[in-house]
Length: 332
Ligand SMILES: NC(=O)c1ccc[n+]([C@@H]2O[C@H](COP(=O)([O-])OP(=O)(O)OC[C@H]3O[C@@H](n4cnc5c(N)ncnc54)[C@H](OP(=O)(O)O)[C@@H]3O)[C@@H](O)[C@H]2O)c1
Image 1 (cartoon, helix red, strand yellow):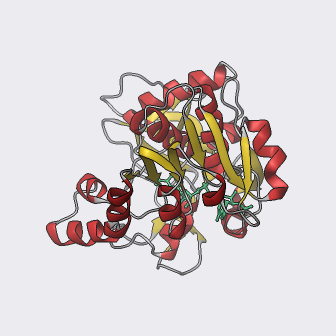
Image 2: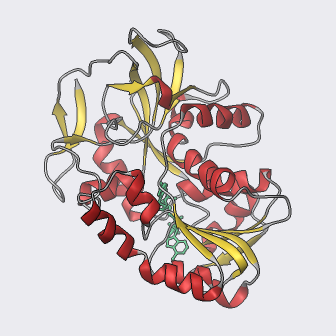
């Protein structure tokens, strides 16, 4: 079957003819109809995670899928051939830039009935990240002040909607050209990250979610109320993440050291920092699907590319300046 792969880090993402995937006992075989494109695909291709996630090369990229169940493993109980599904396959089970993929049943949910395949494929990874940050990690309550960086991006455009649904007062950073767009998603305050310094404008924030990384994380700590929480999704990683990926003692130390400065700074300010790495979770995805079908969460698809142009889709995401998600469409 056709797939888009890297055969070395920092090399080209190119089409390859690869063996058909085989569904294990707990897997479903999905015919891919659309695949969402994520910064994580770019970061993997660049080798940013090669010490942390030891993938074998060549590697088929792609972390989001919507498609149709073509076959099921002998122990699959929830899903049947012909079901329309969507998923963020677990790490080491990725590879949605392909005609078919075998995915553990536990990672999969029925596709929201109200969405097209392209719309559904734009959501699993970013919506699960928003859910795991806002609901799982922070347990956001009505009236809390939440700052979401990069509100016009794939993650931010869903996170704003979910934070509003939870009753938060939502502040976001975005380019000035995206200000109206993020207000339309529900943002109460918009800060132009190119001309304004959010640190001088904000205080007493309960929760910051930072997908920018670097100095932005440290600055984010300084706008929190005492006891507030900053969740980094672009790093730096912490000890809990090292444990979650089963890192050995040496790697655990190295990973923990990456966030030492941020954690020290947080302790000095009386606030908290934690890193979040999105987990595959079909049950959470079903809850998200219910919010979508209830008209509470909406997909935001910025650009769609045909399957043959998957490398161009990744380049478009890398260039930036888009609204929401880039999606690859396999329907011909
Ligand atoms: N840890 C996890 O599990 C996880 C999950 C999902 C995403 N992430 C990470 O989260 C980050 C965002 O992901 P995404 O899918 O939303 O990416 P994206 O679709 O490329 O969006 C990034 C957004 O950030 C904006 N931006 C760039 N520089 C900024 C700055 N200094 N301040 C505020 N906003 C800025 C961009 O605006 P312009 O285009 O106008 O420049 C764009 O709207 C990435 O680093 C990604 O890897 C991590």
